[in-house]
Image 1 (cartoon, rainbow, N blue to C red):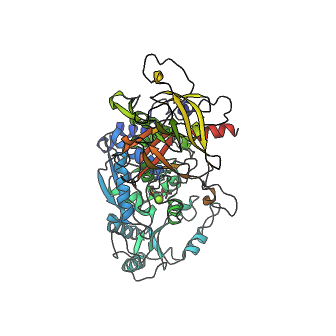
Image 2 (image 1 turned 180 degrees about the horizontal axis):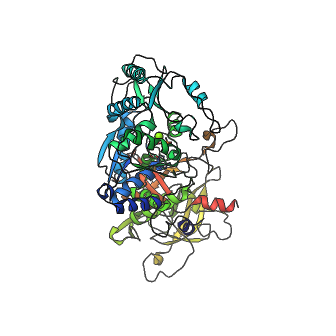
Image 3 (image 1 turned 120 degrees about the vertical axis):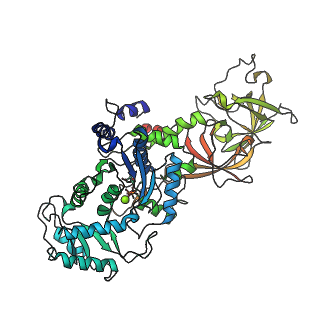
Length: 567
Ligand code: ATP
Ligand code: MG
């Protein structure tokens, strides 16, 4: 699929608005809430944010920006077992890096007291009860959607008894699992979420914010909507799997007679060649399949950042894929297209040789040096020009030479001519090999009148190759990343296999390379286009003694070519 085709498939509806924007505009024109929209991004601090979260962030903060509204950052920290402040800090850093600011920062745990009081209120209304059935019994009584469930023997406990038991739960009088608080809704509902859902469970666990204060913790469904309500959220945007939870969301708001936000569901982002669940990403980290959450092959925001992605590219990607109501899978090459397009505009060109072989120009005096003139970015004149040292001995790519070339090989071969970019045309005269037959030196003749930019240089050759001066080049470790998984749907596995069996064994290749010396003094994350090779950035592990570069993306999509040739 080429990008144009992709574009047309992803176009927004004719009105120019996606369905959520259309709902927001209708809301604003109704004049409700003083025509102010209020959204929130509610991550659970149990892992690092991934590109799917980036989509939700762009959506929620994007609405705030477009409609001059507000957007909160709320940590949905109701599950103390898996949560940690390390994740809280990382999440904030990632949202800021994407270029968004929240109006207020909240934690669902800030509301534990209020949520507790509301739970007592529901008990007093006869709408909640303490059930000492265990988990297994509860799910058995819930039965299946096609048959009515069975009411728990505890369902008709008196208000007084429920209050006493619930207070004892809070007090820590019961062990884990002894009982739960359930909403009393409808055991015959065709929506299983309404069959007396659990509101609170007992957990004798310390919380990263509230410490040992609580022995009961609210369930997501009970905490989420009420947190939205407390913050005055108007549009509570979540992913599609919560559509069936919406009646419950509405039920709590109505039973408590509190501000009632509108829950809206959209399709979560799925990407080819990518796993997106935090649980699986955590497993990749913990089992050392990657070097950490910010391994440049990870689909985490910090992974993309370290790989050289820009916030603009990610935001543009989120904009291009739009907002869908049905689950779909986006081709990861679209994301790669977005970063390629952005870096093409922004990054200076430079030459680097990843797989070097020595080239010696026999008729170029060994004490001679010249400085070749080059533009830093043909897309942007304001980025200036630079001088590149040219000497008798150079490094070129091993792949740019073939001793016995096939037809249409326009690079270097014995007797053949090629242009050295920004410099001269050369002819290959001879090669020197080692005992194994590996080419060690390529000997050439250069033609002084063919210098780039000289008016008399009208001699034409079909190929141009890049090079670096072996006298001035710097050594660098260059890390070539490929897709982490080798199949489009890594979650699809045969019996007895897991997504780990779909890992791409060659997703990381390390090259000892030579680069133009002009790249020395730069900050981590600075990006370059290595001419003819792709976009690269300086890794955080890079030092003056040991330069390290990451390949962000190739210049063209090598997978598209492969797919075509596979038919
Ligand atoms: P995961 O299943 O990967 O663990 P999650 O939904 O549990 O993700 P949360 O931290 O609860 O992660 O998500 C915070 C917000 O990000 C939620 O509003 C959620 O709907 C949204 N979100 C999570 N994953 C995606 C995705 N793949 N595409 C779009 N939005 C997502
Ligand atoms: Mg979640």
